[in-house]
Every structure is written in structure tokens, then in C-alpha cells.
Length: 213
Image (cartoon, rainbow, N blue to C red):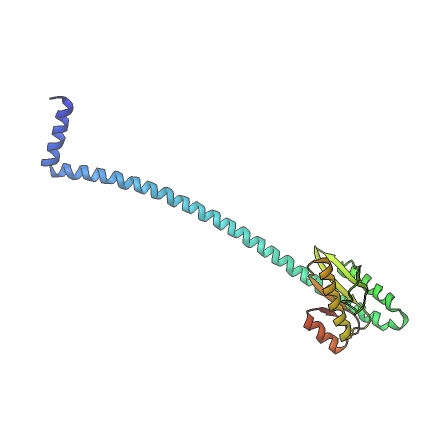
């Protein structure tokens, strides 16, 4: 019998006869398996902890960016409110001088005011209305337009706004959209004088109206 066989025989005999030896072997084998599983779990756990850490870092960056964005929006809104308040004060002053000015001069004065105080460069959009959609007969249609921060703003500037003027502005807006296919972001009416019905109609259509009445 070879030495290898002799060792195997001795090992088997010990397993059969020696209970302590059997328990020691079983314990050793079980410990190795458990140790291997624990190592695997440790690796998975560490991997999960690393992912959680990265997620928290990303979340913190997201909150920081969101807070900065809200602060910028709040600041911009405050600046716009202050700008429009100043515009309204100037509108009142221009309204007091209205008797010395023509309608066209008055409109140009208000446009200059919008550009100076709010950075709204107002330009005239002109298009032929062959079907008479706006006025009921073929005519040229003019709309004051301003584009700021890639947003399109249509503006009606006048010394005096009546409800019929608001309805006319709405038809101009519809005509502009049908011709250009562009999205309009804001609709403004700027005037020192507006009838009560005009103010109600503006709210119904969702127009922003800036006036001192």
C-alpha cells in the first residue's frame, strides 16, 4: 500500500472514530464557505456604499443648481417688477403731456421707454392681410414685436385703450401666429389710459396691461 493510500486510510478512520476530528473538519470547511460568502457580501456592500455616496454628491449638486436657478429667477422677476413700475410712472408723465403730442410721437416715446427701462427693443412687424381677417377687409397689419432671451413678445402701445382695441389686438395676434407659426411668450398692452371694459377684456384674453388709471 502506498503512502498516499495510507494517509487516506488514516484520514477516513479518524473521521469514523474521532468525533472531535470530524467536528474540526466540518467546522473548518464551513468556515471557509462562510468566509468566502462574507468576502463577496463585503465587496457588494462596499460597492453599494460607493454608489450611495455618488448619488448623494449628484443630489447635492442638483440642489445647488436648483437653488441658484431659483435665485436668478427671483432676482430677474424683481428687476422686471421694478422696471415696469418705473415704466408706469413714465407713462403717467407722458399721459399728462399727451395734449402736446401726436399719437405716433406718443407711441414712439413709449417704445423708447420700454427699450431704455426694460431692454425690450420694439420693432414693427408688417404683413399683408389679403383675406381681411383683422379689419374685415384686405389691408396691411402692423404689430409691435420684441424678442428678448429667445422669447417673442407682442406689444400694443397706445395713448388710450378701449375694449374694441383689445379685441383688435387679439385678432392681430391670431393673424401673426397664423402667418409665422411661431410661439408667442408674452402679450403686453402699454397705455396711460384704459377703459374699465378694456382692462376686463385684457384679463379675459390673458394680456398683461400696464397703465395708470
